[in-house]
Image 1: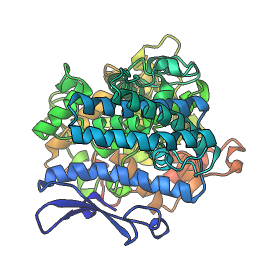
Image 2: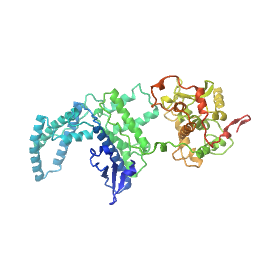
Image 3: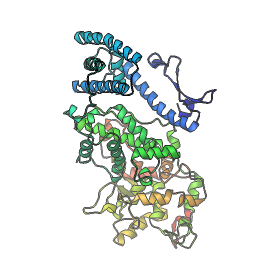
Image 4: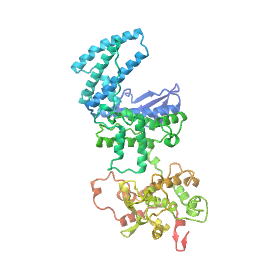
Length: 571
């Protein structure tokens, strides 16, 4: 259910959150028997209502997950140390609340009620502790489990372990209140600290261990997204916080800050913490991170804890399943170029005649300069290659296999190569070859590659420069996708499209050609997650076989004959 359908304006002008409750959960979700759960948002301002509804969506989805786990009989387990830590934290809150009331002053009438309540509760607590009965503590145990996102049926080993720890904490609370009622000094204990869990590493230790793991390969771009997650953990949780003391609510706090961050927060507000930047965004109503960007950070947070469970004996992954719901249709997120847009792209001055292929690429002139900016879009359209794969091509990647001209795509870097010469591919499935489409041959790609090799060039497009992370695709992407640069100068609607749209055009062309799925995967370097065990056998399809398939790829109504090489030269 989308956010808009969950947001309802009531007759009094205020907004409420309305969510549909699945039939199988209506008896276990509080307020869900009617099939709908309503929560007042307490505001008549639509923008604020939308913000609050997003938070309620997250809370409600978590409530559904917990209910499903209970129905399925799923059970979390906690150690005795964890149970004691939960109970100690609960005791600390109880005594802190009691101390706060006394600091603010207690009237004689209220003090009499406090005395009576303490005298009534004390013998009950002592009896339950002596007998192991947990009647008075039941709701508190359930509350602590829910607060930490845990599921444990009443009477289970985990439930009773926590319950008994909380009974002992309740006895300490009762004794402490009685002593305070007599005017004695009873200090409020601090919340559990790092010393409470000898097995647990700190946040900073976990981060450093994760970064230094030699078995994991991470690109600079991936590390950059992780740095935001690391920063959030350090700022919001504390670098010295024991990892085993981090629970669901702590991770939700990170999520709630990240989802409120403005775009490019670090660059726009270099002197502010993430939480401060989020508050500025709230106050100034700045554009926030998109759902996809937020979820990328949350997936990285979960991946860090998942790694910790496997390698550092972290007890659990409290960040699992934090991702925000994304109601956008997947195909709406990935639009191919229309035929009209393709015509506009390949009839731009860059392809019909420009002043030069740098600053003058958009100005009509006499030159068609066949370098990176000319070839990279064509390669992606006719081979499905990703932007990074195109930009990092070397001259010896254009080769012949099985009598067929092909492009070799792998991540092999030359010994001693600098960042610009190191090749990267997106996935393991991306290590492949792709036949050169006949249309690229007619436009002269193989001849271009041979000419570059004859010049002694290692890279096919040596003029393309990398960004600060070493990616050749970064500057090209900005040039091509920016609404003020290549696409933006074509006088057409470019919303929803980008360089990656070429790859979606290619996938649609493979569909139209009725090419089988195994061959589609081979031609596009898509993952094979759904394939069976048989997929690992054999050497794969021959180049000549794939060439017969790729030559079926057509783009109706797209005429590129003005780019063909003719006997008398180029047009």
